[in-house]
Image (cartoon, rainbow, N blue to C red; front, side, top):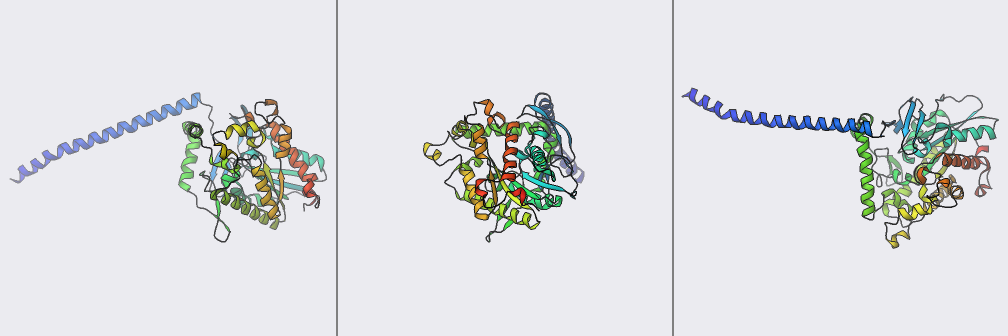
Length: 408
């Protein structure tokens, strides 16, 4: 009796075991197919795409930096050229400098995003390199070192943290925060940006505090960025598709709303936050005995009228009336004046260098394709404007001496 029951149970269990094996087999086949497909896509991307392994790295302390002590060549699609890149032991573009300044050396630290890093041009053509050459020529009584602390996808909020963690140790005499009109306002605010960088915000007493970051997300993204060309390609493809869909739907990028003079609650918060970040940076820099200034870098939308009109043509006629090419310049200038922060704008000089105000005039391009990062001409112009500002001042500064004469 008991033997028959046992045999009956075994008979009933056999189909269940077989069914599980079939299910597991199908999952295994599916997994193998996905791995094989991913491998083909990766190989295909490496053969046919111009995507390169990025040198940008996530960093738990300063948010974003480049590979440390990198020395090599990368092809930059935007500038259509191969660029020699070297980075410091801290992961920023340029030569290594000792932390301790030698006697007679004066240092200028320039903090900014990819506009300052200028990966699309050779090091000798960057704003920072040229400014160093010009200062050593015009003021040879000191040896000048201009340190490039620009990095892709940075923001003034993240740069405040960078100053605390790394820049201050180099004992700069002057710290310049380069505020890019193209995206820095949006990049400062977690309400307007989703990039995995360091974000600051304001508490109810208007004090700055750092928002938490997802360490796992940063590590996963970094691993894929470093090891998968297909991952890089699909990210860029997704951006292009999203841009096309926005245009079809009559929408613009979140960061482009910063040209709107009728500020939403989120935009007003971003401006307030940005002003507070710059004040805090000024306070900490001056407490360390150095001078501080804000430099506004113009975008192609501000320089070329045809680009501006075309870019915002998707908006209704009523909406377009509230979008102004000069708005960011006026707004940031006002914030700096209220806080007593030295402010340098380059918009007037850039427009003077492109009098046609059209991206169709290639000879007047100061940005790659008239739209993106500064090209060689744009970097050279920016260096000249900044040098003049530091050494001669502006008409608005008639009551004070030029910054260069106020350094310790």
